[in-house]
Length: 188
Image (tube, rainbow, N blue to C red; front, side, top):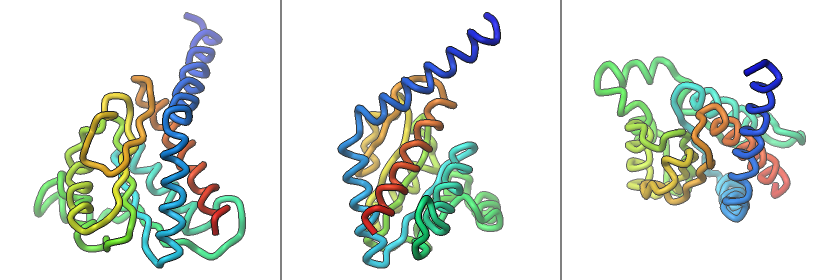
């Protein structure tokens, strides 16, 4: 397989993942944008978490809400639970890596907040524990995942990207998260 073939395959698989998630979840995306806008208007927080590349995506999108996405506006209360290495390493060392997000949810989340989790497999123990902790606090929960996680019941809403490739699942997650940032800004 030559370079052009590899690039073409990547481009097509990316497009299929992005198109598939929007086709399958356009109603969920609009509903979530409304919930997010309502939450921030009511002085509630948006919390994000994930592992590896998804951890970086959580930090990226929290930055879009605190900073700005397209329009200059007031800062919005968003927090990536992946950002504080002191908390993460303390909890991982003193408890378990499985608890790194649930302990932060326990400490920081309040009823009315929204927790958006990112797990391409839908099986990450620390993500599942965070969802459980959030539900116990009256936090609306969302799981961004791939096709293997589409039937998870731990979250109030599941947005699953069709396709098996982790990179394309993450690319589609970020595209949806950017759409959410745009939709929330338009509502504010």
